[in-house]
Every structure is written in C-alpha cells, then in structure tokens.
Length: 49
Image 1: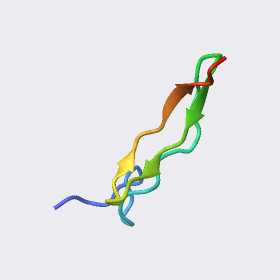
Image 2: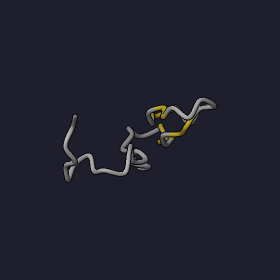
Image 3: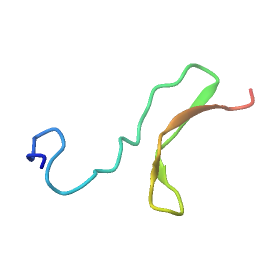
C-alpha cells in the first residue's frame, strides 16, 4: 500500500500541467482525457508556418 506524499497526494491522479515550451514555429497542445478517461500527454505541433 502506498503512503500519501506531497508530490502525489491522496486525491487520485491530478490533471497534468496545461502549459509547455515549444520551439519557434510550433504550438503547445495541452494534455487531454480521451474517451476512456485516460490522460494523453501534451505535445508540440507544427503551426504550418
């Protein structure tokens, strides 16, 4: 059994950070939950320019 910690906490999984750093010409796509309730990681995508 895992003990509660300041890093993890006791309230279950927290939402991942919604900000990120990308290279110029790319934009941050924040993490999101899929249809099964699982978190997908955020990522950088091309802005097409």
